[in-house]
Amino acid sequence: MNKAIEDCSFIMPAEFEKQKLVWIVWPHNKNDWPGYFTDIPLTIANIISKISNLQKVNLIIQKKENKNTILKLLKEKNFKETNVKFYKINTDRIWIRDSGPIYVKSKLNGKKMILNFKFNGWSKYKNFKKDNKIPSEISRLTKVEKVTPYVSKQRKKYYPVLEGGAFDVNGNGSILLTKECLLSKKQERNPGLRKKDYQIFLQKYLGVKNFIWLNKGIEGDDTHGHVDDISRFVSNNTIMTSIEKNKKEKNYKKLNENFKILKNTKDINGKRFRIIKIPMPKAKYIDKVRVPATYLNFFIGNKAILLPIFNDKNDIKVLKIFKNFFKNKKIVTIDCSKLIWGFGAIHCMTQQEPSI
Image (cartoon, rainbow, N blue to C red; front, side, top):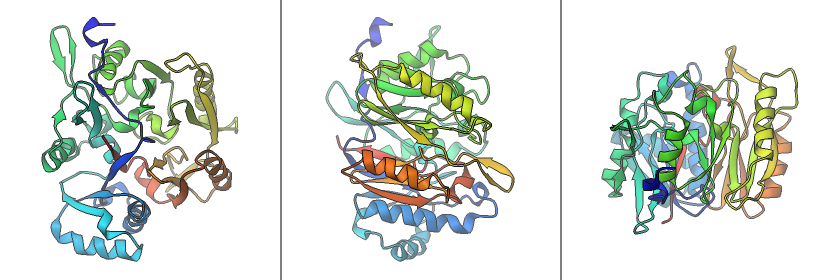
């Protein structure tokens, strides 16, 4: 390991640590839900309402004149108005987990800062320039200083692309990632960067040194392997992971391989993680297109978990697992049967700002 970065410069708090607020983008891109967009604002309003009744939400809108229409929908869902603050920022999509700010704490002075990673539409879509500016805009509007991460290679500086859904941290030195997303030639985010390059800059900017590389994500995922669809830290020493029991299902082998990796994984103190299996819903198709329906795309708030459900027989089983683990939080289920047509769910459309 490079001596210059042995000491982490920053540390990223885990999602399950105390949050100041949650960032959400109001839906506006009808092309992301062709034929089903009319259902989406109501779903998002419901999610905002559930969160706002328990903690603060910063809501990004495209036009100030839309505010009254949005407020009307939110009032229908009984949101807490004093907990919702509006910001006007132009965006391409609502998936702020991937395009938005990554909040970290400086190890030098304890100051909260924004990591301004590049965003390029998952190396798949061409309309991403507005989304790429979101961290800078939030930094400017909220006066939180930003840092643009880079990695040095062959005497050159590379400014890497990194989406929030591509990794998950436990706030205590460990990180979950997939080889499919970050090391594959398909939808390649950072040509020329290798595994060791990722580990060098992730250690520096996220404060991690225990890298848990899973293999592949799930079928239907247009990000090509985001880890927040398959495995998540729910405490310092506990990981929830997706499992498929149907051997004929395409996800069976992928998720089984990931589970085997996790079973042999240890934390920074050399102790094995507790692994909680979360069954997958039945393969879901919309207009004959496979969508990435998974229960792992949930959001952890200060007082509640927002859990996606899909009118599936496993909905109730998964709800029981979550209630059993998150004993001190309310489990709020959200029907994401239409939202998932945009190839994302609750975790993808939220980004927490920690209390630092």
